[in-house]
Each structure stands twice: as structure tokens, then as C-alpha cells.
Image (cartoon, protein in one colour):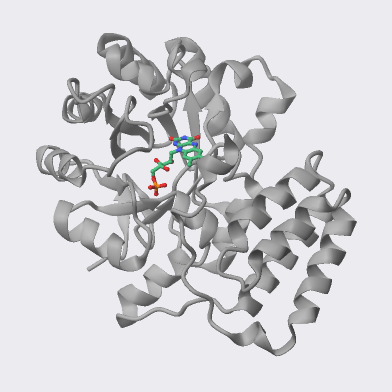
Length: 346
Ligand SMILES: Cc1cc2nc3c(=O)[nH]c(=O)nc-3n(C[C@H](O)[C@H](O)[C@H](O)COP(=O)(O)O)c2cc1C
């Protein structure tokens, strides 16, 4: 059974589901789409450079923009300088975040040199960062980590134990190694081993594609909450579906009309907020969101051939208007393996 809530100190997360941080995906617009559909207990920002924030780089601070309806929300930070990380966490606290999170998972080459999963190879430095940041803020502090650098150095258990002793209040585990990237399967037995060894809440992450997977993860690992990344980008209803499944044992599949409404609503928000890269965001969203729409490849083609946001909106409206009565049909569950966000990004 999926848990109904979990607590990070006095912060109650209800239901016990978390949107995974995804760079280039989980900006404020996307997060509010997820919140609006219901069922997601905690939102997280994309990972944000502590160096960028503390230098007050305008562009970096943009990543930390959020709206009131996003609470509870965690700011995820990365970096390897303890004092800079502490200062960045203080800024997040002042901005009104409910919690701060330290990224120990990013596999990107330019990030591992200065944080992310690179810190899994530098445990003394990591301990210093955790202690310094912990002492600097009052809001809950959490970590999100991979299993280790490679399969010869699985350190998740050591890291979470050390984090707990340092006052870290929850840990999300994506049990793949840095070297693994996204290949193979996430090894959920690592989540189970960590859960058994510590008292702080453990959030399980990796390869959940549907409510049944989430339930299986909780059953097999005993984790306190589940975190969903890629599946939420192609099926933002997944949190709502998990809540339906938790409470009734069944869940609904979105219809084409649901997808149309969501896509149009999201596009209207992009138009009204005048995003600098509005067209790029629209194209990115169309890539993920239209899997499961009949003749979706045609829809993606017309979105990609458009030049302005207005043109995209008109093309999408025309496409769906031409489909007429099909709109109420439940779509097939989107195929995440067909085209995942990281494939789209690279
Ligand atoms: C496009 C993309 C961007 C990501 N960005 C971040 C990030 O900023 N911070 C982070 O901790 N993990 C990041 N991740 C990893 C996810 O949070 C998550 O751990 C991973 O995708 C496994 O979960 P999933 O199988 O539910 O997708 C990213 C993943 C993807 C696909």
C-alpha cells in the first residue's frame, strides 16, 4: 500500500509522493501543471548552482522562482564549496522554501567536478558540506543521491548513515551508479538496505512508470515515499493516478481531450508569461505530452515546424479540432521507453 504521508521533521508531505528534480524540465510552469493535476505531495526545483546563486547571477536565481501554490517545495542545490553551499541554502530559506536539498546524483561531467555525484567519491568533503549547510539554515535539509560512483563503490548506505548523524532529515535514493547513467535497471535492493539501517525517511526513486510500480517499490523496499521523474514528464497524471490507486485500487487513464486541455493550458501560460525561450519550451513539452495522442507524430511535426508561440498554439488547436469526436477516447499509456526526457535533452 502506498503511504498516505511522511514527515520531514514538522513538514508533513501528503500524499507521500515527490516530483523528482529534472534540469530543463521541472521549472515553475511544469511544477504547477503537476500540482494542478493533484496527487503530488512535494515539488522540487531543478538542481541549481550554489556558485550561481551566491554570485546573484540573475539567470541562476530565475531557477529558484516559485509561486505560492507550489508549497511544499524544496530547493535543490549543487556545489562543492561548504561555505558557498551554506550561503546558497540561506538564500533558499530566505526565499521561502520549505526545505533545501543537496544534489549527490548528477552524473554530468561538468557537474561532477564541482559537486553532484562527484561528492560520492569525496566523503570527508561531503561530510564537511553537510555539517556546514546544516548549521546555516533552520528549514529541513535533505539529500538526493545515486548508489555510488561505480559498481565497485556503492556508498549509499555509508552516505545516508553519515548524513543522518549530521542532522540531514531525509534522503532520496536513485539506485544507479554514476557510471551507469540511465542504463540497466535501478537496483531497489539498495533502497531496502538503506531503509533498514536508518531512522530518517527514505524516498525511493528509479524506474517507476505506473502506480503499480510505486506500490511494488514500497512493498519491496519499505521506503517512506516514492519519487517520480521521467514518467511524470510523459504522464503528468501519474501522481493523481497513484492517489486514485491508493484510495480505490483503480485509476483512470487520461483521454485525448485531457491531453488537449493540458497542452493548451500549458501553452497559454507560456504565452502569458512571455518566457524568453517560450518556443523551445512548447516544443519540448509537445515531444513528451503527445505520446498517447492518436497521430501524435503529425502533431509533433506541426509543433516543430512553427516559428512563433502563437503559431504553435494555432496549429495545435487546428490539429485537435480536425480530430472531432475522438477526443474522449482514453489514450494508451504513454511509452516512456519510446522517448525519454534525457534522450530529448541530449
Ligand atoms: C532530464 C533529466 C534531468 C534531471 N535533472 C536532475 C536534477 O536536476 N537533480 C537531480 O537530483 N536529479 C536529476 N535527474 C534525475 C532524476 O531526478 C531521477 O533521479 C531519475 O530520472 C530516476 O528517476 P525516474 O526513473 O523516475 O526518472 C534528472 C533526470 C532527467 C531525466
